[in-house]
Length: 155
Image 1 (cartoon, helix red, strand yellow):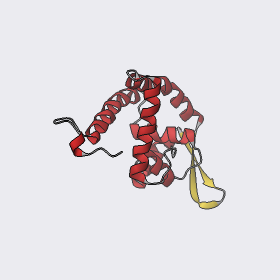
Image 2 (cartoon, rainbow, N blue to C red):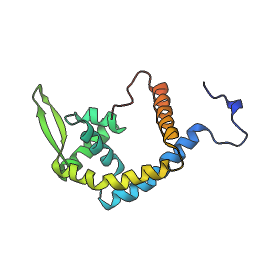
Image 3 (cartoon, one colour):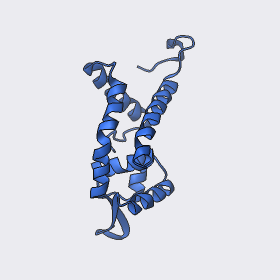
Image 4 (cartoon, rainbow, N blue to C red):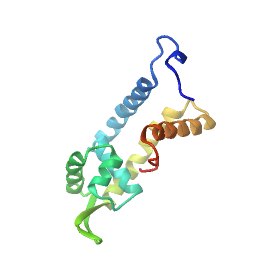
């Protein structure tokens, strides 16, 4: 059921405003953690995407990391220079390069897993398990509503 403007109490922020507030709160905490490892949120996102799905092209990684292909090009160079990812020619298409998480990249992610998990736990602390599950389903539904039939498990 879609919320109508009249359903909102006077002075109550819109859903979009609340989502942006949450995103920014997460971002501040994530930036703090990642700064210690000298990586950006975009670099971290790219590494986590590759942990879940190795062997992507730079364009595919860009889509899954929420940046343009041009921006991802710079990210890939930086991550490769730091030894966090490896690039290999695509055996099916020699003009394409595929990206893989390196052992060093995996070690970095493992180092960051606990502090990132703590952010998520802090965010979800006031919700029961049932509410957490409903929150996840609601987020997925909102995503699908805006993106059609695209899968929510692209990451």
